[in-house]
Image (cartoon, rainbow over all chains, first blue to last red; front, top):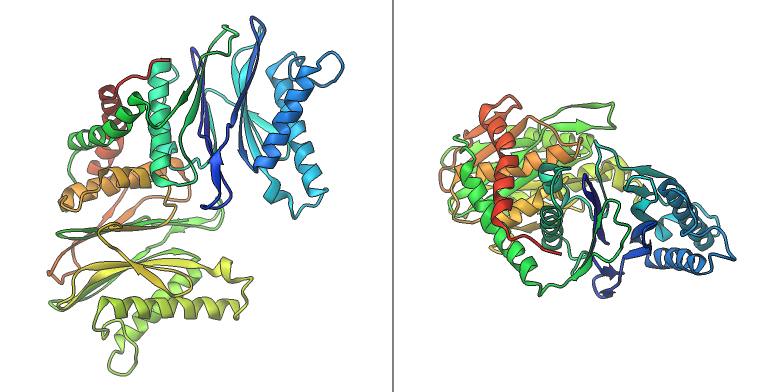
Length: 243
Length: 243
């Protein structure tokens, strides 16, 4: 499994992904699941993937290859004029890879399946995030649904539902995501460190605010260790239920 | 779906279950999932169920029927001499009902499937809890794994992993379970109020410390509403992650 979140804030976007890939508990490795394409001053596009690794790697390779020879080949992720068109391209590429693996067979589609989060900003458009399904169609974040998760989404959802605020700053959002990821890691072996993090400030059109967060990272360790204590003191403030 | 937890503390046991049963979002109802058998001074047994409602109702009816005519019929849940024997009986009854529904077919077994938590105390034995699988076999709580969940278990697990302490009092444990259930209810439509609660104090052999917690319950409302604020103040105590 996998765990990725794309979060839309009023000041921009925050992406975080884990890096564990596994085919059973005795076959796991570190694999990057976050990929970015940037044209400074014009566009920043980030893609995160969950699901069959062969499918997602092939999809990224196709997007990558086509972006590198943009003059000759279409469609390219670097030539789409809106994020909506980018989402359509990524969806079509994902569907193409899955169809190739299954030979069109419905039955086998599940095992080659994958989900993708695509976010970023192009030109005058607003920063936005899309969740792309294996069928190639997709949905976009809204004020009511300002974040998307893929992979092992359940453990880390309650904390985001509770604590998300569109006005929060990047540092607070990172903290929130780290707590959500840490809760997931503590409950599920298929999600693991290091985490990949990217922060995108609206209208900046740069893709270099990234960080790989290792399990030795002192701030992550402090958040992970401190969250238990913080929760306990939070408990104390709640009223007791007398039976 | 469903959400049930059985928690072992040093001072006794705590059980909580939701009451929503659904076959699709347009077909849901309130249905009890917690059942108790008590012989004052001798035994207290509580069963919680998740899965196919026809299966779990039939299983409870069989256990109930056989307990009412204990003189004539065996096996009865009221005549087992240990909790281990109770778990074997419940497991065998569950397996019997599933086999009856499927006619022995492996393929259909999934749709009639169910899981069960059985806890309690008999005579000189210690209070304990078992998790029973559809196949009729089961596992018991240990010091390392002091609680079992069935149903929609993922949303509410992280908070229990973090805040559980075997020495905690009943009031604190109820608070913990209410937060875990509230996190689940806020994230998943298939789990709903009211909740059924039972507290069992070791060696008391009484089954009357129960409560049905409605969504209008003022303490539950205070915990539900207060938890968001408590989390936010807990956040403030964590260090910021500067990028």
